[in-house]
Image 1 (tube, helix red, strand yellow):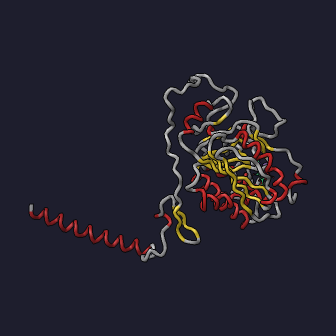
Image 2 (cartoon, rainbow, N blue to C red):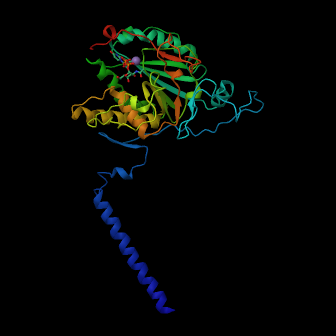
Length: 355
Ligand SMILES: CC(=O)N[C@H]1[C@@H](OP(=O)(O)OP(=O)(O)OC[C@H]2O[C@@H](n3ccc(=O)[nH]c3=O)[C@H](O)[C@@H]2O)O[C@H](CO)[C@H](O)[C@@H]1O
Ligand SMILES: [Mn+2]
């Protein structure tokens, strides 16, 4: 009995000595004084920046989908739905088409959450000419009745037209330097978005959408589009086999997707989600694009190629059908029952700074 007690005491002693040694060793590895920090030990919401560590406090979207007692709406069916299109992906993410949601119900659920939806657009050079139609049409169709904060980046704030904003909709105009190549303007958006989220939006908005400005709203775009990570199926390639998708096919680029891989082809003109998820998306695309620059390669469709690579490896939790980014208001397709948001036709040689 006594022998056994002694044995346990000796075992405990050695245990303590061993854990002391491990502790000392760990401290030495991380600098000991706390001057450097092992990034693997940081919490998910901390970032190492040039200034040191910043805490990014993400606004949490952990609401339940609460419905009000007595609310009347059409009975949802387990049997009947759209039969001409897929409304779910093979990883179980919904694909939003007209007829897959009930606005009365979904608006009432999300009304209770007091959400802010940040929305970013860029208008540099001649693209400032697209701002008026974009904003005026958005004010008729985009998250009407919900809080929206638009951020417009432009090199010519003085040319931004006065547009009457609806209730709880605000516009912030930010001046940025213009660039000589349209490709750099388009790709440069990723870094600007990454910094905007880091510096201002992380704890101020629940969701963000990043949209092209050469666009116009013609129909409802609302809370049915909200999700953790949201991509839009490209209007030209929604009915095409993956081998004909315009992914980057050169292995030298970080955006490379080999033949035989890929889910959908996503539009570069609209993506969104929670601030944390979109921050990771923009940061990753910015990093991958700078590796490409160092290797003297530019992806075939610039940041759209990198976005497609990102979505292949980080599946969106919700997909929006091409109703949410259509070709042109004068184009039709049997599956498109409503055009919500569409490209505005443009003469490239007239609006872009280079060809
Ligand atoms: C429908 C769609 O998915 N469009 C994508 C597509 O071509 P797009 O032809 O739609 O590209 P684009 O010329 O509209 O450029 C993208 C965006 O960059 C901004 N901009 C561009 C040029 C300029 O001089 N000033 C300016 O402000 C503006 O916000 C514009 O909406 O491919 C681009 C990258 O190759 C982007 O991924 C676009 O989002
Ligand atoms: Mn565009």
